[in-house]
Every structure is written in structure tokens, then in C-alpha cells.
Image 1 (cartoon, rainbow, N blue to C red):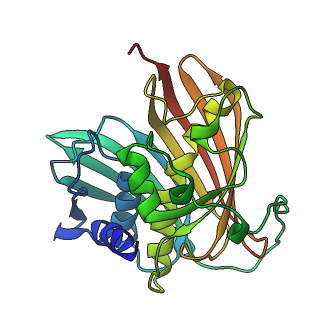
Image 2 (image 1 turned 90 degrees about the vertical axis):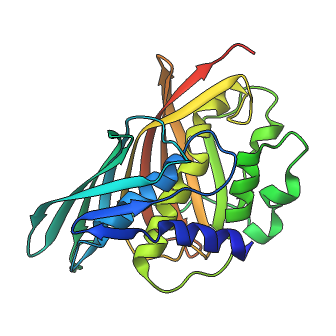
Length: 280
């Protein structure tokens, strides 16, 4: 499992080819399009490498076109603002001469101030739950296999392949990287950005009794926003509390809250995605 994690860390390690311009690649596998979390994570790496102080506290991303996994990605960073407390970057990912993704990220120098947060939901310890790999079936896809290799995901709520009817509009999972990461906080933030896209949009299908693993459903991220509230490690257990408030017009909205095992709220996530029924 560490090998899969090392592969993702290597993919997040972009090549600097000019000032404010970076090149990234995709895994060498059989996927038809680039996983959205990969592009978001790489774009955040590109932005962070142009920032001298502060850590990312928010990002807003738009998925504009499907990415080609066989072609390198070019990331162009626009240094919007360098302030004493806040730094802002805009990143555009380009393939075949067209923008496929856009990210705006804000970085903040650490300050003291008021503090409060939501309490963590009640959940059994992750060690008492089966991992996604242990509970997978022969119906699992290569996408699920890749997810299991990268992240140890343990569903508190019903697993996607076990849905047989409408369920509450919520999903609760424990997750952590399958292996050990270094101490660079940018790497942990980028890996959580990567992983936050794995299960969130699937939450929009729980009220309909189906999942992203259903071949009659087509799903794609449209936009993705995150706010980071405090330090964390992506290779330690994180509880991902997910909820879908609405779906309409072939789009679904999902929100997420990420807690450390000791109950600290460290990230908030909102995502809208395309969810379509397709004919077999």
C-alpha cells in the first residue's frame, strides 16, 4: 500500500519548467479521464510553490473539461496578491492548448483569534470497521481498486455497493493514507484535497439508493471548495462527515466536514457535480 501512496506523492511533485509554470503527469493506468482530486492537488502544489509565507486556508476550483491521462498537464500560476497576512494565487491547468481546470487559493500567515467549531459526530472507532478493501466484491471497478490502494477508507454508514434502496442523505467514513507521509504540511493538505474528492459526490446518490459504482450513473465534478481550519496529518485517521442538501437538473450538491480523531474540525468541503442516468 505504501507503494501506491508513494506513487501519488510522486505525481504531486511537479516539475518546474519556468517561473510560475509547472508540469504534472497522471498515473500510468487504464483510466479514461483524469481523477479530479489529482488535478486539484497538483494545482494546489503549483500555487504553494510560489508562496513564501503562510498556509492555505481556502481554495475554490472549477472543473472545465475532462483531462486526458495520457498527456502531461501544464499549470500556470498567476500571482494575484502578496500581502502581509494574505497571499492569493490563481492556477490554470492546460492540456491540448485549452484550460481544463481553474483554481483560486488563499494563503494566510498564522494568527491568534477567536475559536469555535462544530462537535464531531459520534462514530465507532475505525479499527472496529472493515476497510473498503476487505469489504469489496467482484463488482468493484479499477477506480475503486485505486482508491483502496491509496486510502484506507472505512464506512460507518452503508457502503456504496451495499445500497439496495433510498437512504438518509448522509455518509460517514473514516479515512487515512495507506502508508506514512513526511512532515511537510503542504503535502498533507494536498493529499486531503486529493482524497476529499473520492467519496463526497457519491453522497448525492444515497437518497436514491444507488452509487457511483453503478454503471448506469455518470458522475463528474463541476466545482469544489475547501476551507482549512487547523493542522492535521493525512496519514492519521480523519472522520469525513458528508451530507447532500439537494440534487436537481442533473446536478448534485454535497458538503463535508473533516475531523481529526481527537475531535478537531480541520476542514470544510463543498462540491457540486454532474449526476446523470445513462442508457446501457
